[in-house]
Length: 433
Image (cartoon, rainbow, N blue to C red):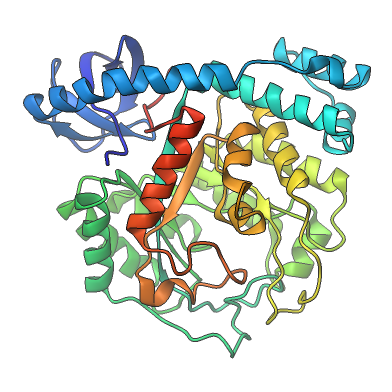
C-alpha cells in the first residue's frame, strides 16, 4: 500500500514546487531532490520526498483516480451537517460562528468543552468534521513510529518508562536494528514519513542521533520526525543539518503548577522555548498535551488547546492520560472518551488548517471505536507502530497499549479498512497554500 499519491510538478514558486493532484494545486518545499517541471514526485508534510518514474506514477494514479473520488464521495456524505435541531440554542450559536470563521471566545470554548447533552456533543463533532472536510478534503496522513529505546534519565510522574520503574524490562535498539526497521517500513509497507522516538536516553545523545539521521537519509527517501525529549538549540540544529525535518515534542500541559508536579526539576518555559526554536530552524512541529491529569480542570484543557494553537504547529497530538501501575498516579482514572473527542473538535475549530492525530492512546482508551470516533470529530492523521515485535510491548508510557501484540501487516490492513469505511485517502497531499 502507498502512503502518498504521486503528483506532477507544474511549476515553481519561490522555494516551493507547484504540484497537480487530480486537478488540485498543492505546494511542497524541496530540500533534498533535484527536480524539474513535468516530474512526478511523492510529497509528505509539505516536503518533496523523491521523484517517481513516470510509468510507475501513471500506473499508481490510474488506480487511485477512481478510488480517490469514490472515497471522497463517501467522506462528503459522512461530513454533512445534520441534527442541528437537537443541539441547544447556545451551542448552535457558538458553532454557527465557528462555521462562519468568526473568532470564538474562551468562555465559548469552555462551554463547548463542558457539553454533556448528547445532541450538543454530536453536533459539535459534526461541525468539526465538516470543517475538517472543507479544508483538508479526505486526505489522512498515515505516519509510522519506531520506538528505538525505552531507557530514560527522567522521572516524570505519569510515564511508565520513568527512570524509577525498575519493573520494566529495558531495551535499546542497535543502529543496525533501527536501519533495518526503517528500510522495511519504507520498502515493504510504503511509509513516506517516520517518527523515531525514545526516552531521554544518555547513550543516544544528539550527536549520535544526528549521525543515525544522516545515515537513514543517505539510504532512504523519507520524511523524518524525531521525538527524544529536549535536546536544546544545538541538538535541534544537529538534527536539522543531518536531514530530519520534523520534531514531535509535547508540552503536556500549559498549567505551570501541574507541569512542575509531573516533571520534577523540569521547566515548562524551557519546553515551550524548545518548540519555538524548532520552528525557527524550519522543523515541522508536532505538539500537544494530555487530557485528564489529576487536578486538571476543564479550564486547564481549554487553555492547553489554545496554547497549542498559539504555537502554530504542523500537527497536533492530544491524547488521554492513562495511568501506569508503576507510577505515583497508579489507581487514578483516565478521562472519558467524550473529553478526548471534544478536545479534538475544539482543536479543529480553533485551527481549521492544522492536522490532528487520532492517537494510539485514544484507541487504547476505546479499542473498538476510538480511532474512528476521533476521525469523525475532526482528526485527519494517524500513526502505526512499526517498533519490532520483541520491543513494542516494553515501550510502556502507559499500560496495555493497543497493537502491542499486533503485527505491522495487520495494523496496516485494519487502518486501510477503517479509512475506506470513512472515505479517507491514506495520504498526505502536501500544503494547499
